Length: 366
Ligand SMILES: Nc1ncnc2c1ncn2[C@@H]1O[C@H](COP(=O)(O)OP(=O)(O)OP(=O)(O)O)[C@@H](O)[C@H]1O
Ligand SMILES: [Mg+2]
Image (cartoon, rainbow, N blue to C red; front, side, top):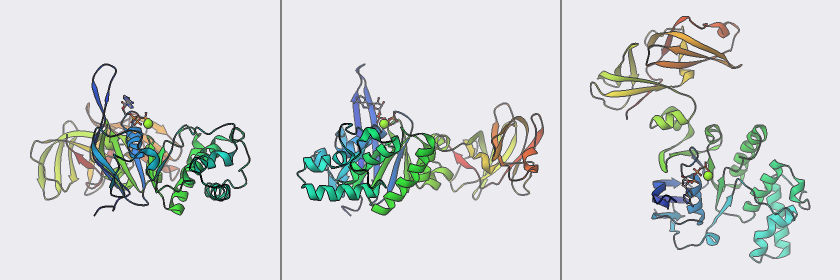
């Protein structure tokens, strides 16, 4: 049904001509549908096409081909200032010689909104970002976190249907960044505006988003809920980019029902649950998170692989063990230090058993 989504990207391609004369697909045939009121993140490494995607939604850039719809309406003929979206950039670009009030109200003034109405909306916006009473300050008299809020207020004052945020917390220190993450999430829930949030920080995306699109080299590799992306990564890139993980290369020996038996040369057999069908001899990679592996607690119906501890890293809440099974196979195991005894499960050089259930890993194919 038309108009069902806040934003829709349909087979969007954006090519840039490089100075060397080549053609770079900065956004490479991306399809994405963003729901009304959703906190949606674009997550990926530097250069993967996040900002270019935002700029096309905002109207600062036109797609080479494909289309962008806002509430079901094709946007290619609609200039940036007429689109119901606003952008908050990493560099806030506040006017230093103006007061907070003037900064926030500037866009409204340009649109010819009257003084009284302007003052009312600026006050509302300041309330939203929890900075009431700051209207008369100059922006250079504000901290980084406060400036960030003013930049946000300046976008919210226009009452956009969709807010585009391009690494808005990038300039803040870690502690303030974490505080602002929670505040932004709360604010988004309260005002109900659709947020499209760009970040290259996977933890930030997991914390804040309703759904995440993981991008690499211009392509959207997986779109899903945070837990789907973490628990069921679609491929090696996603598994590796989100959180920490282990990869064990092997080949399929056989399959009975949903249980796949995999030969890991040099370290034995593993059984892994999968809903997919594999052929005998097919190369596969087992991916399993460090916190799903256990040391020296063999499972009766699970996988128990023998290895040797190569490193022990104490990280306060957890201890991370590097365990080698064979020349090709090594894993990291994370054990919580919930008790004193757990802190001393194994030492460097010890022979250990690493266990995991057949349901813990994912099977990836090339
Ligand atoms: N105007 C342009 N002309 C040529 N190439 C461009 C242009 N804008 C971006 N690119 C290239 O397109 C690719 C995607 O850039 P983009 O800015 O979208 O990445 P990003 O995901 O936002 O990265 P970052 O996390 O570093 O901000 C990069 O390789 C970049 O060099
Ligand atoms: Mg960018």
